[in-house]
Structures are given as structure tokens and as C-alpha cells.
Length: 232
Image 1 (spheres, rainbow, N blue to C red):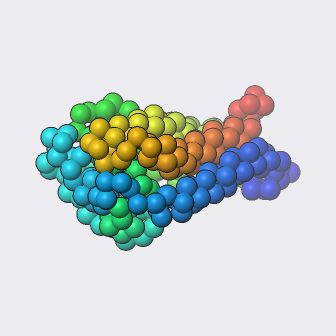
Image 2: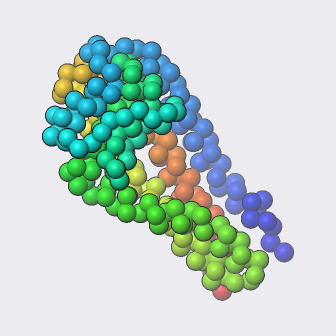
Image 3: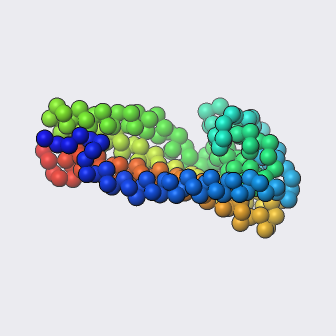
């Protein structure tokens, strides 16, 4: 009789992803804590920087607003709102400017029709369904002796993996835009470019960790469902 799904040996495959995720979170917290205490030379707040960068990009239909929480900053393409957490919205720190400019980068991607962003957005509903349905389908398939049902669960989770992989170029591009925008606008000095990149690179590592986790989970599901063993 096979071992329960969450206690089989394939869980070992997730150890590298777990360690990478913990390291990424530590990097983010460390970089943010360090540079959120360093005031930028320009003395402009995250909200002011975002609005000015949007104006310079010729984008006038994106609203910058505050959202509660810590590091909850994001751009919502559905309603064209750039939402910044209170610490980023009001702060003049290097960390705040980097995060605000990064989210502005996503708004600019949306405005210019950056294809990876459009592709990622189109995959959101499919990835959500895949994330919810994959494990139940595989468990039912194994319990009921229906390998095809388990394989459909693997297919469903593939959408999650694709979403995470496509997210990587979207995030890296937004970070590159952020540094260029801030420096080009004079909001940060040349000496502040390195610290700004440190904050954004730390944040990017969390997306790398998420992608690695998704890929290793897919490998687990391929083994559990019997696909890699060639089971009928």
C-alpha cells in the first residue's frame, strides 16, 4: 500500500526549495530593514516618486494609493492602481524608492504591452485553478486506482509552474526599469544605485525560490502519479 501523499520519500526533493525560500526571506528582511533606515539623497517619498515616474512615462490613468500591511506593495492591472504599503508610501528611504519604482515598472510594462506581463496575467485564473485542483485530483486518482485522474492533476499543476517561470522575467525587468528610472530622474545618486539594487535583488530571489519550489513539486507529482515510473 503506498504511503500517504504528504509522508512519502519525495518530500525530500523539497528540501533545497525550503532552504532557498528561507534564505530568500532572510535576504529580503535584512535588505529592507537596512535600507529602510537610509534616507535617499533626493528626499522624495515612495508615493511622490511613483507619481512622478508615471507622469514622466506619459501614464496618467494609474492611481497611486496606500494599502495596509507590510511589504504588500503591488500593481493591479485590472483597475490600474499602484498600491503601496504605508512604510513605502510615506518613506523617503532608499528601500521605499526602490520598491515604489519597481511597482511603477509593472505599470509601465502594462502600458507598453510588455508581452511576458500580458502572458502572466492571462495565466492567473488557470494557475489558480491548477493550484487548487492538482493535489485533490492526484490523491483521488491514487485512492481510487485511476491513474489517468492523477495525471490530470499533474497537468493542472503544470499551469502553476508555467506561471512561476513566466513571473521571473517580469520581475527582473521591472527591477531593471526601477533602477534606471530612479537614476535617470535624479531620485537616487550614483552611490545609491548599489543599495537600491540590493533591495530589489533580494526581493527577486523570493520569486526564484517560488519557481524552484514549483518545479520540484511538479517533479514530486510526476513521481507520485507514476508518470516517471511509466505506470499504466
